[in-house]
Amino acid sequence: MAATSLSVSPNPSFTTTTSRNPSPSLLTPKNLKFPTTATSPFPAKSVTTPHLSQTTTPRAAFSTRASPAASDAPATTFHGLCYVVGDNIDTDQIIPAEYLTLVPSNPSEYEKLGSYALCGLPATYSTRFVEPNETKSKFSIVIGGANFGCGSSREHAPVALGAAGVAAVVAESYARIFFRNSVATGEVYPLESETRICEECKTGDVVSIELSESRLMNHTTGKEYVMKPIGDAGPVIRAGGIFAYAREAGMIPTLSVSYGEQMTYIGKIPPVRLHVPDLFD
Image (cartoon, rainbow, N blue to C red; front, side, top):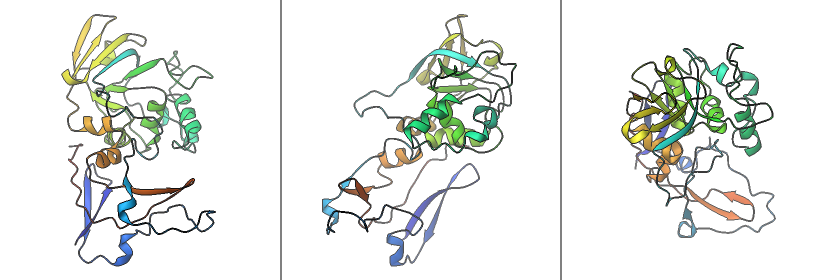
């Protein structure tokens, strides 16, 4: 049986690699590191596959924001104050490199990332995106111009915005790596506008976004704008990122068993063929 692995290539697409004759060592990949039970105070136990339960991780591994309950209807409308920026907002302006040592999977550091979101903007932006000593922004929607998220490829950029409470970014265009990271992490919706909304909206305007209708309404000015549909990226972001989406769709089985506070990954996972739609063309 062929074993297939999923990897994210530098190009904006997903690729798979296949090994025709997998060795037994591939049943437990060497490049994965799991907590050891060598020093566990609990006695060794023999666990077979029937005792294992399949679990779903709600968000990407480095995200700590809780996903909606399964019974909740998916959010299709965002409403709040907007923060307007111009063209070529790069990732160093979104989250400066000095804060990349913060680990998003740590809840307290995830909050700190939010407090530094967009702190790299030049002094010409007189209104701060996040007030001093705060971790959340009062602006839940960011409106930008062309080439939003350009610069270095850092997943911390969309994560910082999400940690600050941003639900969506609406820009004329995106750097592809920022768009990919937004979808992969599930932190924010990267929406594209048909026109330069950044020239018609002002920071502090009250706006609403209707995802299902690809529409943005500025309640302060009374104007309405058409956006490009989010397409297949929508369900991935709503699930909490690419890995959460794959688990939700049954593409990635996760088998785990808990002994006290230790989690040990056990069992033989059958090879699976993953099919993820190309979201970035």
